[in-house]
View 1 (spheres, rainbow, N blue to C red):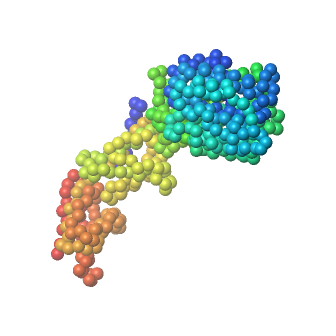
View 2 (view 1 turned 135 degrees about the horizontal axis):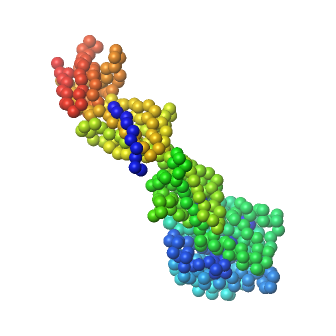
View 3 (view 1 turned 90 degrees about the horizontal axis):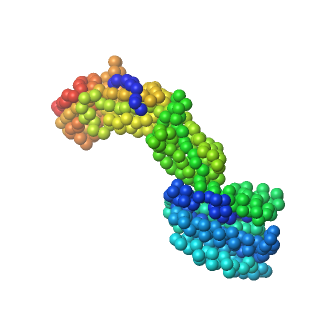
Amino acid sequence: MIINHHIKASKINRFICLFVLACVLGGFSLKSYAQQQKQTVRILFLFDASQSMLGKWNSNRKIDVSTRLLKQIVDSLKPLTHVELALRVYGHQSHVPPQDCEDSKLEVPFGKGNHEKIKDFLTDLTPKGTTPIAYSLEQAGGDFPKGAGSRNIIILITDGLEECKGDPCAISLALQSKGITLKPFIIGVGLTTDIITTLDCVGKYFDAGTEESFLDILNVVITQILNPTTAQVNLLDTYNKAKETNVPFTLYDQKTGVMVYNYLHTFNSAGNSDTLFLDNGITYRLKVHTIPPVEKMDIIITQGKHNIIAVNAPQGNLSLKVMGTNQYGSLKCIVREAGKTNTLHVMDFGFNEEFLIGDYDLEILSTPRLYLKKVKIGQSSTTTVEIEEPGLLNLQFGSTGYGAIYKLSGKDMEYVCSINENATQIALVMQPGTYKVVFRCKSCVQTLQTKEKNFTITSGVSTAVSMKN
């Protein structure tokens, strides 16, 4: 066999948040978003209509302020064809006392053009009951249409903490880990520091102390929802240049393990890594599907800037060839990292594939198998492994029997394969070399009746061997 190298041109307690609200209030460009965002965004408003929402907040009652702002946002989202809305309300059906911890209902399901239905329901809404946040969140998980390909967001508008002994943190994590929703945003109205710290496990928290600050916070949150932060993934070669491309990569939510984005790396027209739009409320784990794969942990996306995610992924090519005519048809090679026993990849002869630079052990599944140690793959170069053209063995027996073929190596014999005990003839494509066949027929009851015969396989030549009497 011959090895040669050549250069190659080569993401509650009081919880998610009135967050879509800031879109219009902050001057966000809906047209710009619609042009950038093609993925369906489903926003479920989870609205608190518990008795405490009748309380006064700055210039008016909490219920009046929140419904007014929510209706504005619902109006502003009409032009966005990729955004679908729904409304779930809790604490609005049963008076307190007694406490109804299942007082939660999907009032307006997801659908196209349901903006007026949501606004009309909010206009006549009267707070009555308790605050079953965890139960409502759990129910909300079933409000989203099934199927992949959308960004599902819950927006909880609330002034109170969980009052039904539920665990909003656990429910939130369960929804995320199942891939039902993204990490929630949380806007609290006048909460104490102790209460605020309990919300970290639920999602990204924002505290609104006044009506004015509430508007500012909504502006920040809606921007993050409807205008995902830009980023690019740079795959670095051994010279620290972002020259590697055409490799699949996946971004996972590092906390939940859920797959968030899955792309195949591309260069744009300027020759740079193409721009991505990512949610910034997630700590990501990046997995680049090179051979072997590489990973990067603890990736945090900063809102308001273009984020560069760089990972070392220097690659070269491995090419497998058979000299002359490949009589094997489909010949495969097991690739392992040098010195390791785990199979890294199974590669077909006649193809080129990219690997991370380094040393690899090859096990070629020819007859007999060929083993190559520490085959080096370099940056942007092709390592070509060529094996000799095989020959063909036609082996005939007078009757069925037992036996095996061995390769002669010096004074020793190396096992190649066994003979099918029910066959009277076999044909094998074999590598060139000197071999011995050892055979005893089934009806032969004495060891001394064992037969053996040496033969030679030559590239491109058919060799007949008879073990008949």
